[in-house]
Image (cartoon, rainbow, N blue to C red; front, side, top):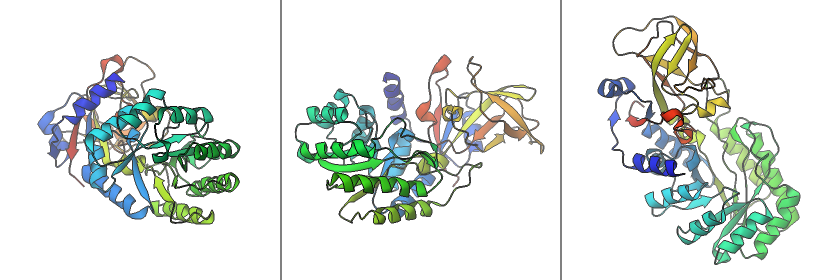
Length: 390
């Protein structure tokens, strides 16, 4: 946690420098560390598009990419409130935006996180999925009347790259008494769910909303808010996806089907859909060994998510001192650490003449890249720049 705090402190103090292209950045810096190339304007457009099309309040999921420039781009794009999952994320939002509301939607929290977020940082929205977690919130909150508690529901598997309800979420049988306990404790009652990461089927939201409807019908507890979670996808080359409009339509129709009125506050928590295409990572080739490449970033850095998700990342060779050959071939790409598992899960097609000293730009790495970065083997260094090529 201290490393996370130190990293965020450093990044908040970085002076933003903008370049017209990755090539211009490389000419200026000739970096020896991986470079995160943000496209702030693209993130702003994504945020604005989401705000204009979702029929409710849009929260940015801070965990996806907590870099201050990313948060600012979402904020400029019209997102004023945030889904947070830890006390450190609460602090980050409170320090950066005076008028923003953090929603503590992680269903399992320490008592100190509940207490300090409530008493020191004014958090008034909490998620729970178990009676024991609700008891912690009851114990740590002074005045229940000003607090909204979201009972997180489990959803059926299917339609997403990662299913979350194996770890979090109450069944209908568990949620009904839990909702009644929330009401009896004096809290405002709400519900939430998450269909899973990188959802590719809009019907998953309608399936989850049917669970919401059954829960409300059985509990007979009026709810004030419904958070439909995240899961909104990014468009990777190896995945065919419906347009965002189809997801919005499914949610609107699903909400109407269970009879929720306009008096209910509807929320969502996009992360990946807002920022994935808003950042690339430029890496340097340390060594070519036949059809193997060794670069200065890997699964303990920007490519951590690649070790458990098979998302294909666009890659291009960048060379400053000569032409690039036309022929392409697949290469096995290894990261910089001494761990033999530090290998990208899929071959990467690159020009046949790639060599030591070349750079590779990997796109679609705005989500769960720097957020998962470690300092394993001492490979922690990186830098952030803004690329205005959109």
